[in-house]
Amino acid sequence: MRFEHTLSPAACKLFRAGVERLNTLRLEQLRALGLAKEAEMQSAALQQTISDQVSIIEQTEGLPAPIRPYQLTVDCAKLVADIPDTPAAAPATPASSRVVELAPAAAPAGQINGVDHGVVENA
Image (cartoon, rainbow, N blue to C red):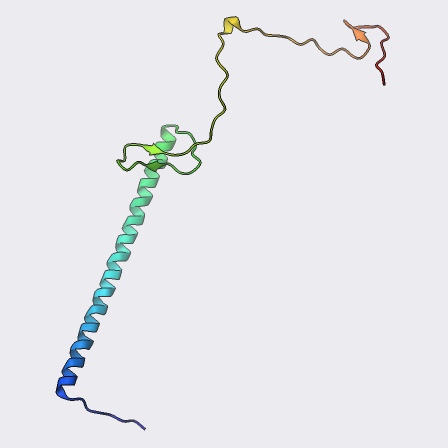
């Protein structure tokens, strides 16, 4: 069984205005979502372009490999990243003052200067 109740003209007018406003808001929301999605896509594309440019600079300038990717400073004047610590280099010594020691070749047990002297190692 179905029951219908006819609304007064004032109530009908009120509901029509509310439904029209609701439809308008829904349409605006869909437009805003579309604009937001478009802005999101443009933002992602621009971010990728910037990342690609940073990578190109990193490679062409021979920057040290970072622990995490390089980041631009706020003023966009520098690339900054943490890099692994490198061991301290030994102080440079001029070639003319270097001393080169040559170790003698190991002689077999019991031999001195290539001559067998019958020396036996303790076991």
